Image (cartoon, rainbow, N blue to C red; front, side):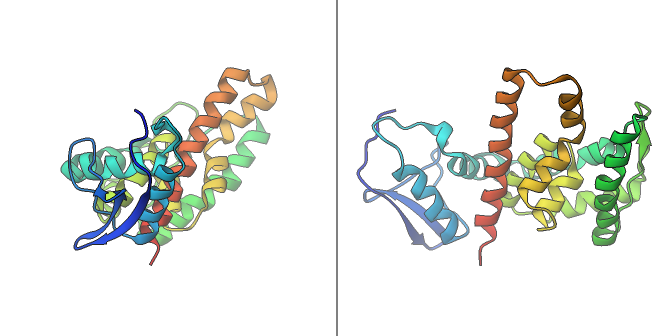
Length: 232
C-alpha cells in the first residue's frame, strides 16, 4: 500500500489514545477505532507510521500489528486466548530437562529451577519437572492458579503475553517477562538453552539462524509492546 498521509501523530481521545494520519483517526483492519491505553504506546505506534517511506511495510510495524491483534482479535475472544496461553503450563519448556549430557543438564537446572522457584513464590503454583520424554503430570491446583494469573491480563498485555509464551514455549518465561522478573534478552536466552547447546555441538545453518533472528525480533517487539502498555 502506498503511503497516503503526510503526518502520523498520537492524540488523546475519551477512551484512551489514538493515531491520527494527518487529521483522520486510524481504524483497525476490522474497522474498529484505535483506542490505546497509554500515550507512550500511541507515540511509539505513530513513530512506526512516520518511519514509512513511499510504500507502507507492515513487517516493520510490530507494535501496530500487536495493537490490531489486541483490538480486533483478543478483545473479542479473551476467554479462549486465556485458555490457549494457560495450557502451555501443562507442558512447559522449563519442566522438561534433558537426561544428559551433564553440561546441558547442569545449565538447565541452574537456569530453569530458579524460575520455577520464582513462579511458586510469586503465584503459589508449583510445576513438576521431568527428564527426557516422559510427560510431567502437573497438579490441577497449580494449573488453575496460573490460569487465573493469565486471566488477570487485559487484552493488550494478553496479546503480548501470547507472543512471548508461544515463541518461548513457556508460560513460566512469558509470565516472568510480564511481571518484570526477566528482561527480553535474558528471557530469549533462557528459552534457547537446548537449541544453543545443539548449535554449539553441530553448528547452525544460515537459514535456521535467519529464522531465529526473525523470531527473536518478534519476541523482543512483544516485550516492548508490553512495556509501552504499562508505562504510567
